[in-house]
Length: 237
Image (cartoon, rainbow, N blue to C red; front, side, top):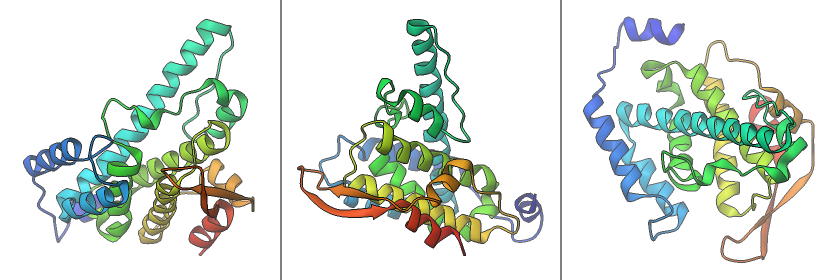
């Protein structure tokens, strides 16, 4: 509860809910799949928009909303799967990997079509960068524990989608995962009593396989990412 003590104690931050709503409208309307600029440029632009404490609150809210809506979508898919097959599926927010291992081809990766309209490679990627870049101020505006929990949840869902859900690993997808890992590490480093790493992350950290990264506009491989090595590098400090 250190974040709450800081809010109630000295150095209280002044937040503006109206400005936060304006920022949300701006990033939702101007950016995403409909915007005619590359995702990398959108991330840079949105990151600049979400400056200051109000921007940090908005960024944390975007990450949490995406994670919540993705979980609700997977629950709905599991219920539909049960109606069609009579087989029940466990949707565990702490570890999505068993679900995707079991029936990955039957699932739709939810992050491309969430009700909020945020695109994973645009608004979400920018929000994650803002959270990590301002990690040391995070506990002055909100509880960092649920925020980093949602960052890990989106990381789990994204990497499971790569492995079991036919999600294409291109440079935009790899950039999102790199931001998720870096931001999670930054938030944990700024916490006095960080939570334990979730099971899916610990499983990935024990691996050492390399995933090819492709050009978004074509089939050509332009690089590779070793998730286990990247996680160990960032989180085992």
